[in-house]
Length: 435
Image (cartoon, rainbow, N blue to C red):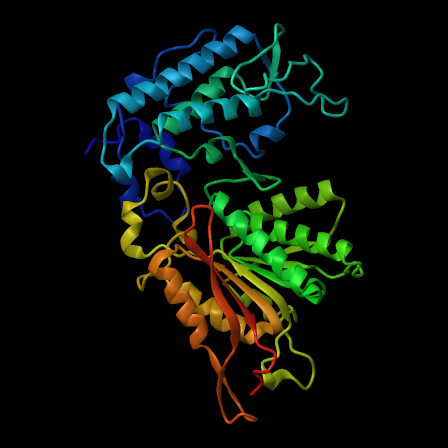
């Protein structure tokens, strides 16, 4: 194992609060710094002792502040690609430490350039110095003969790419940016980076809304909201279905997002505020700090109608959650980008096959969903999805009329992700399960 050397002081500041210090101290410098310390024209190599800055805005949302020539950008791109190639060639670790495929790294370089170049110049933005031409149709070459306005300088771009290759910081954290569905989200090491496969949860929820339109006039919950991605998208879909089906526009908050981490809750609030500002809507999503259903109990949201408190009728139209589900035993084998930089609080699902939080969520859903309400969960797939199906099917209430226990949920099923893996579990609360 290599020693962490000079990378520790800077990289350790990027780690999520939940990381144990001993894990930080055992970090690996994956390849010597000399492989990527070559200078690029008109810039300087970023020394380790440079002051570290966490940008408060996603890269794409920052205003232009410096200019560079086309040749400078081309040189930076060549330098960055050479760094990626050298890192890939000179470092052949075990599978759990492997770098992404070289083509994926090349693609990340072009994403950085696309985000850093100012291409939308409006009078109210302050970005009036120069207007670069757009990238060519293939998206991988710059096509401008003029100076180009950038949101960050070339030395900052070099720092971003060094962090990506040396410290194995996910690209989304280095640029504070995550593209998810039609959203541009702020992400920091306080929140899990929203995955592309999680986007399918919104499609499944939309299908449920269209099947039972009345659910759109009831509150929904996003438990463990993180960046707020699911909550924001759920609110947008509820708004669309209301318009599509001529439902009256609700005055109440339509999605309640719950998050136990204060830092993550602040990121979610930022993303929600930006979404509501761009959509012209207000009070679509509200963030509550606390553990699962606990912070909602004092708000009245979970209060059953008078006279029905003992019948477990519930008040919630839909509950969606992508909870921590990675078993504790598997945490040490995660790829470095996840293991060392994403918050363990949002990853680790306990010892028993990662099911610790599914049990809490499913039992809470059985109590708080309105009859006919919808439950949707993301799992790790494989054996875990089968365990969650069994867990939901095992929840029952005693029915006086039938004189026996009956399942609380019906239509319990698994759904596949983009790769055909059964990853999501959905269920509907029965209408005839009163005690």
